[in-house]
Length: 287
Image (cartoon, rainbow, N blue to C red; front, side, top):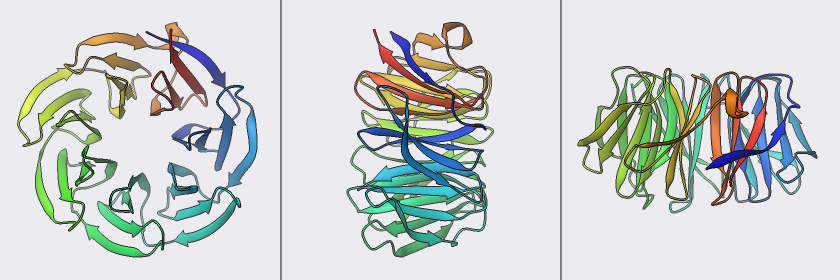
């Protein structure tokens, strides 16, 4: 069972996204700052970046921080020098998801108009720009082998692309409303939707199970040491077995969030971090 270990209340606006570099947690907020935190003390590190626009999504990889803004700007920072190394304006609409594929040495960005960009991590060159015609791309995931890119789309579809060729393999309706989150595990795919459902799919796209998991949209899914964790706009975090049986509910009564939970990330096999519109970051750990 999870309990609250630490709470951080330093941002002046809603917190949209989190990242972890193995030592520090990074947070992106409506207050236009991306800030770095010590996970043991909750104290802010000296690393902080002020943006012109709110940052909706961040990701760290290879000592770099990728940040996607609400106007489509994409920034890349070197975490060691703390300097910006690239600034892209390829996207013209809000970027909601950035994902790194270490197998292909690529990173992906998806925007509110259904465009997916593919970049080389080392050279930071644009490799491809795909208009998928699917509405807002809310989440980008990878299959366990990293051979497929998984796109959660606003038109309710789950789209699968081959990561080496970027060819479309499949797309199917996963949710009646927007598909808002995706996670691959054990040769299966779990999706969350604006309809508040969790749906479990086989690798071939056959539905295995569907449950009404939350009251509102499911914004993020993670695999935590054998358990699945979902975060929702309904202010709750829920812990599930891999068969989608509820184990634990983390809400305001258990010291959790009072507003929409926008992101969750794993920082160890026993701990994860959440952030919310309530301007709080919470570190949870197992008893």
